[in-house]
Amino acid sequence: MPESPLRKAVFLDRDGTIIEDTVFSVDPARIRELPGALDGLRRLRRAGYLLVVITNQSGVARGFFGEDALRAFHDRLREWFAARGVELAAIYYCPHYPKGALPEYARDCACRKPMPGMILQAASDLQVDRARSWMVGDRDCDIGVGRAAGCRTVRIGTTPPGETTPDYEAANVAEAAERILAAEG
Ligand SMILES: [Zn+2]
Image (cartoon, rainbow, N blue to C red; front, side, top):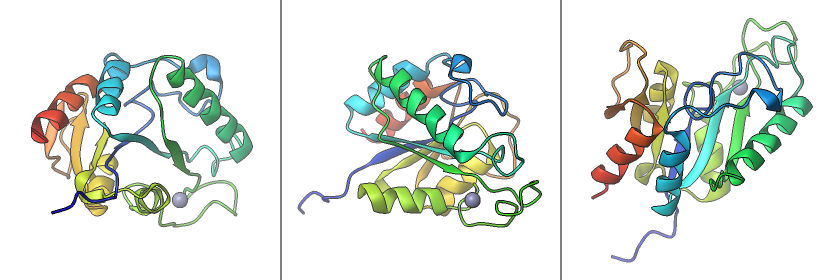
């Protein structure tokens, strides 16, 4: 069998997974690594995975910051990781929130996790095989979005088990990388 031309990816939640939760801030001075994140991301990248961030950013719909400021923050975030040897292929965000303050964003959508819109879009844009890919995050919605998109899942951190069951659990992204690389043999 010829190898699939499609690529494999690890989709990653942002706040509470690869960086400390910025709590509705888009100030680059707030970027803080979570323990093990850089190490784990470097290992996944070396193993050939595209690293794609998938993040709900309801702060836009709530009126806390605009999409321009969010995109500028994400440019700084990619530079921050690149300076530390980690290439992030792309960052996708959902600006919506049904109870948001701004009418143009206060609606149901197909991209707010656990809806799979962001992963489906990224897989199309980046030619990713979802069945060979993974979703890593600290919340139920992260496990839900991974399953909905046909990816395997790793839940990290100490969040009490929720309604969704991940394929693996790990303390942090470094341990998640170990689980993923072990599962891939
Ligand atoms: Zn959305």
